[in-house]
Image (tube, rainbow, N blue to C red; front, side, top):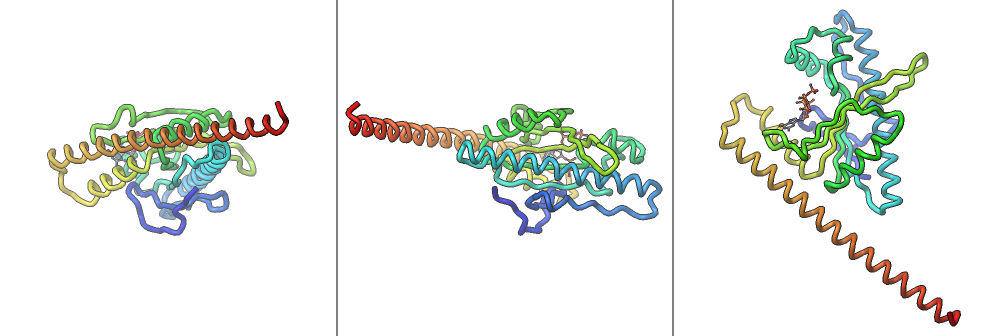
Length: 257
Ligand code: 0O2
C-alpha cells in the first residue's frame, strides 16, 4: 500500500496526508490552556487519536490480506486527522450546541476522521463490508453518497463507527468517521473543497453546475475503469485456467493416464 508519509502538504478539510502506521499516532491538536475543561478535552482528544490508530491498523491489515488473497491492494492510501479545536468550536456553534466536552463527545461524529482512497468502486464496498464484519466495530451510521450524491456532486461512502480503545484503566468506545472513496472522487472533493474555502464569494450557480458535471464525468470514468479492471481480471483468470489445463494434460500424458 502506498502512503503519503513523505508529503506534508495540507489538504482540504484539514486532512494531513500521512501514511498511518501503528507507531505513528495521529497528532493530538493543541488547546488553549486557559480553557475551563482543558483536561477533559485533552483526554478526549487522546482517545480520538488512539481510535484513529486502531482503525488504521484494521484497514492496513485488511489491505494486506486482500493483497495476498486477491493479488491486489484495494487501498491506494489513507489519510487522517483529529478535528482541530477551532473546527470543533465552529461545528458546535453551527449546530447551536454549547461547547462542553460532554456535548462534543455526544454530538460530533467526525472529531476523529479517517479517509480511505481506493482504486476501484467495488473496492469501496468490499472494504466497508469486511471492516464492518469485525465484531469490535459498531456501525452507528452509514451515508452512501455514491448511490445518492450530495447536491454539489460530492461522492463518498461515509461510515460512522465506534471502536474500542483500551487505556490503562478503562475501555472506551470511540467514534470515528471513515470516508471511503476512489481516487477520482478524492480528486474532485479535494479541489472542490479548496475552491470553496479559498474564496469568500458565493459560488455562482453556473460554476456549481460545472463542478457537478465534472463530478458526473469523474463517476463515469470510475465506472469505465472498473469495467476495464473486471475485463483484465477475466482475461487473466481464463489464461491461468488454460495454463492449468495444459499442465494437467501434460502430466496425464507423462503418466499415461
Ligand atoms: P471537515 O473539514 O471535512 O471536517 P454530521 O453533523 O457530521 O453528522 P454532516 O456534517 O452533514 O453531519 O455530515 P456529512 O454531510 O455526512 O459529512 C460531512 C463531511 O463530508 C464534510 O466534512 C466533508 O468532509 C465531506 N463533504 C460533504 N459534502 C461535501 C461537498 O459537497 N464537497 C466536499 N468537498 N466535501 C463534502 P466537514 O464537516 O464539512 O468538514
